[in-house]
Length: 168
Image (cartoon, rainbow, N blue to C red; front, side, top):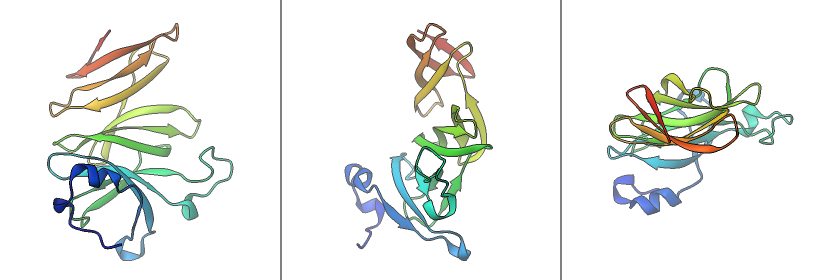
């Protein structure tokens, strides 16, 4: 399959490109990857997975560990990233400032939400007092919305603005 320049593709077509193979320069492993989101500047986030390198039959994902992926529109720039202690990283939103929102599962099988800038430096997103947090979206101002479960396991919404949580 010949890949057209991404600038020539519509967003719907781009999001339909789910699996491709990315060969890294310098003898690094080849990854298969899926693209999840594109921002207004043409940066894309998604997941990279490599069953051969990460295979572990005891992992619930059947040995395929996911890593965060950042690509530019020409595929000439990419980064594979993971928060410290992660065994499964899934980014799912990116804004124009290249702030990436996602979640990861740590070695103890606990899921966390994270915010990172281009895969460098990570901030965990945990609503205080919640038994579960699920960040969903980030806008151009860096505001994050999502859901959280209170101690009674009732799910509610939140807005994270300037480092402060507003809860419903």
